Amino acid sequence: MGRRKRAGRLGLLGAPWQLSLALAVAAFIGLRWILPALVPSRAIGDAFTPALDLLSSSALCVLGGISALAAVRAYIERSKQDQLAREIEEGRKKAMRAATIAAAPKPVPTSWSLEALQRLEWKRIELLCARYYELVGFRTETQASGPDGGIDVRLYKLDAAAPLALVQCKAWNTRQVGVKEMRELLGVMAHARVGRGIFVATGGYTHEALAFARANPIQTLDGQALVDKITALPPEAQAELLGMAFKGDFHTPSCPSCGVKLRARVGKRGGVWGCRNYPKCKTLIQMTGQDAAQASGKAT
Image (cartoon, rainbow, N blue to C red; front, side):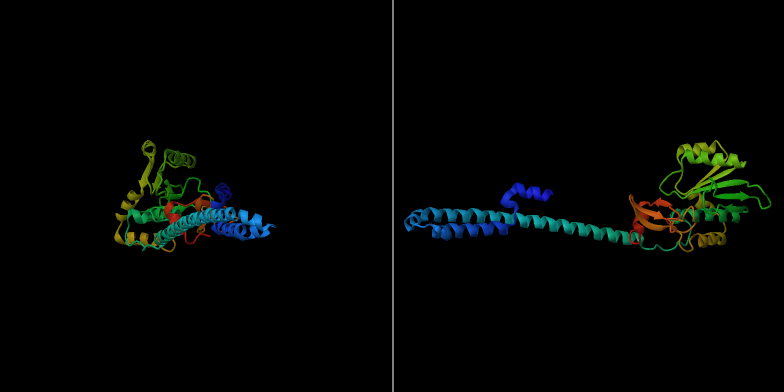
């Protein structure tokens, strides 16, 4: 619509240059030869011949000039469009190269570090925490698929029926746990009549959350603190945890409702993780920038 309006304002300059050239040739031939041939009186035709010659030449020059200008304008616009198309294609290729690099599988870690820990999806973090506490002498119960009620792992003394502590895990690498999540854990502890809570967050905590935890029986572990606890174990225990945590697909998130691995999809707001059991399960998790890059070549 915008192009048609612009062409209308430009007149012949906005029309194809071939049209102006055809009009120039038609006007010249019509005024120079056809119109005089239609005059019935030779005397009258001879009288108007000089004027018609001048008019035909003028029409040829004017319309020919317009045709030339239209051809230049069309060439410039076509060059701009070609340049824009090249820039778009180059941008697409760069994005594909960046996505390919980001999506390339990284080597499985051979030792524990914060970077290695933050590559784990949320369910693998929970299983890692449970196995760690088993190695230091507790009996554990992990939450099956479905709502966790604010509890991911229950810690027991080996012969106890009631849990000694409740563990809540958040695999939030780019987001800090706030006081809201701390209050929720304390509420679950009070409801379950458990006197101790442990919060594990790979991305850390806000100052308010840490102050709330210090004022209540909640131990906080950020990602580095968890890595430090793991690396304080004997080498064989560290190796066991490393093999367990990084076995198979340790990055793709699991469905909180079904427990199956989610699938990369494209949603209204970009990349999302969607449940493989859709439409029975409608779980959707927004991807982070890194996840979106890694999934760009395999989203369905």
